[in-house]
Amino acid sequence: MTVFEGQFSGASSLHVAIVVARFNDLVTAKLLSGCLDCLGRHGIDTSASSAQLDTAWVPGSFEIPLVAQKLAASGRYQVVVTLGAVIRGDTPHFDVVVAEVSKGVAAVSRDTGVPVIFGVLTTDTMQQALERAGIKSNLGWSYGLQAIEMGSLMAALAN
Ligand code: INI
Image: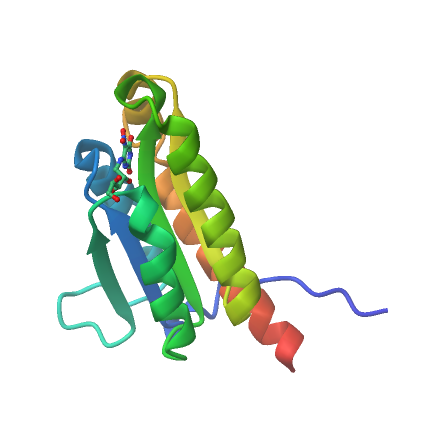
């Protein structure tokens, strides 16, 4: 029996793309910094001159799938992380944006075979979003960890 598992030790060779939404950037910028902190602590070069990490900013979460698709299909990255914050109190079309981004991200991942981490917070209030972006914990850090795990797992499955 073979047990496939992602590892966290070989992350220094991983090429990662991050797509982050500007909408609610009070929240998403914190998610990004948590994610970068995690990737950096696992050996990924997160400097401005890094050749293994690229970041794309999009206007809002609705635009995330299109850009994630472009990056995933480029063949340059083993994993793509998406970061956004959709807050129910801010929008009457909360359900539309959430449905589009969640289904879109899942479709990109399946269509390209590249793992795409769903790091889009969906909360009722800004307070809840901020609590998940650093006031209590920073889920950006978890999304970074999940990216490393999935990148490593997919590599193991390919061998
Ligand atoms: N985009 C978000 O990422 N979060 C939101 O809470 C949000 N609200 O509240 O509307 C939001 N809207 C913008 C949307 O993602 C698109 O950028 C916009 O509709 C243009 O296509």
